[in-house]
Amino acid sequence: MARTRRKEQILARLTAQGKATISFLAEEFEVSDETIRRDLKALSRDGLVEKFHGGVRLPMPRAEAPFDRRLSESSAAKAAIAARTARHIREGATLLLDNSTTACFLARELARREPMTILTISLEIAQILNSGASPHRIILPGGELRKADRTLTGAGTISYLSSFSPSYFLMSVVAGASGGCQDFDLFEVEFKRAMIARADETILMMDSGKFSKSGLIHVCDWSEIDVLVTDGAPTEISEQIDHCHLLLAPTLNGNTA
Image (cartoon, rainbow, N blue to C red):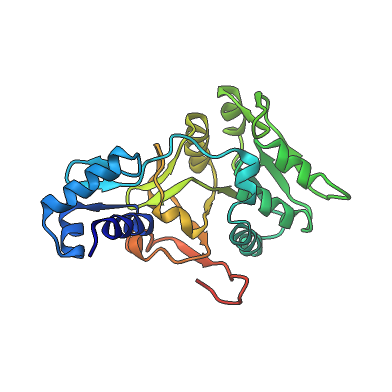
């Protein structure tokens, strides 16, 4: 195998699984550990991978993409996840929605539902729910407006919402791996930790692409998630989510992944 071709296949392997050990890659491509190290050194020099002790991974992003761009990413999966989540929510429930783009898709589904009490930190979501002849009671906390994604932030925001005990807390995260759920923003992490403790049921909405991604800050363990709604079963962490009520969202081609 040509060296250039091997590098391409190393990158393809890391894209599929996020990270790998040097010994695994050496066995996979039937070369020595030293040969793999030379390949990784070249890839690292070009900024294509990050090395750690005994292994390598794709460069870890340090922040989320802009909100408007995230709204268009994986939109079909997010719409399917939102529709499946909406069917799980009972009539007349009290809901707390985070500020994720997946929650925006859920808000569009809920706008057509019977009256509910809905709390959120997202002005984007509040506007979706308040459009037309919406029957919902919508509650927003105080806080500082973060213009980039129209989110209300601050310690007072969390304190105010902590006085409620919603039936459901619906959230998303940037990554879900063997170590649990991860995010980038410190306020959002603190918000989610506090709301998980307040809700009767915590529902994680997450497209399957995030199971191979990495975040920056630990949000919670899988044991704290009651319901996982996704478009693809995460077989690599199946034992860790065994306690979760797993809801699979139908894909556009009619399959359930």
